Structures are given as C-alpha cells and as structure tokens.
Image (tube, helix red, strand yellow):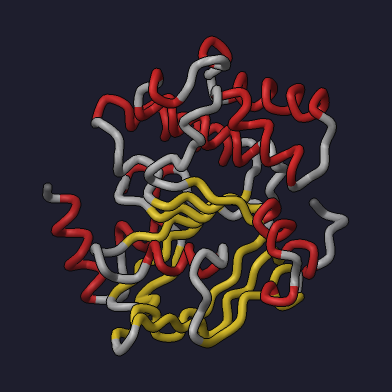
Length: 250
C-alpha cells in the first residue's frame, strides 16, 4: 500500500452529482470520494436518494448533472462494459439468469466482457463460488436456491469480474431474516480481505462494525460523512440523530 500514489489510492470521485426524474430532484449535488480499501456504508430513510446514487455511479441511471471520475478520468468517456467490470454492482433482487446454473451465471460475464477463455472463466467462477460457500450448489439454477444462496451467487458473479470497487444496493433487503446473516458474513469477509465497497444498507450492525466510513443521506444530500464511531455515538446533525434514534429503537 505504501508505494501507491495518492491518485492510485483514490478510485472514485463523485462531484456535485444531481439526478432529476421529471420535476422531482432526487440527488441535489452529491460530492464525496472513495479510496482503495474503503468500506463505506450509506444509510438514510427510504427516498433519501441512496439507491439512485449507486445507480448513477454505475450508470444504470444517467446523472442529470455533475461528474464521476474513475482514477481521475471522466467515467462518462470510458467504455461502459469495461467500467462496469471495474465498478461492479450487487442488486437487492439478485438479477441472476434463471435459465443458467450458478456456475454459468458466474462464467458468462467473464467470457463476454473480459474475453476470458471458458476454461479460465470456469476456474475463476469456481474459486469465487467456493469463497462465498456455494460450491455444493454450482450446478443449481436460481429457482432451486434460497434468497441467501442467490445473493451469494450474485456476489461471486460480481467478484469473478475482478472489480476494483463493488457497489451493494441493499443486498439483504429482499431476504428472509434468517438468511441475512449468511450474506452479511460474506460481505464482512470481503471487507476484511481489503475489497473496496460502497454499501447501501439498513443493517446498522454492519455499518457500525465493518465500515470505516458512514454516509448519512437525507432528502438528496449528504448530511453527514464520518467514521462509524462518530456517526453512531456523536452525530453532528440533528437529522442524523433523529434517524438513528428511530431505526435503532425498532
């Protein structure tokens, strides 16, 4: 890590990002940066713009204004498939191909986008399915898997693309409560392994214990961006305090 330059350390810069849907302004000028090794949890009430922010960073939605810089280069000018492989995304609804096995779900992107041979892609897919504890289910199709198992396959699929940063959009919100822990355990292991992660989550335990930064969003702006100890024990903003008191008292 010590031989990295500051530019190498900085992966993403989000500059004054805005997103409108018609007359409704969802993001109102978001600015922050992501450095190598960061695990940033984005928290906030429903409708505060968290998922829209991730979708704009990944260009699943086109920003209305502002810039996203990837290693200092305007992401808008980069090859979209290459960018998606480096800035990967895990969705709350898994987005697996239902007609393919878990293994083939983890192979197809590698062969199509990264142009890996089938043999190399299979080896990588097997490696990451093992990492998330899904080796016994490699040949199962999504319809044969539980929600937690589907999400672990989705994480393996994203990891197989060798992303530099992985975006998680509420990865546990579609899961039954007993399946949440297995997915959070995988994410915790990835964080401990040094993967750079940007996580929209309602899981305050993960935000508090695993993140090195917590961003609290409120009504389309970043109200607070600080280490978890500061956010959870001594938030600066009244609206952060109100949000945490509501969600932690549930």
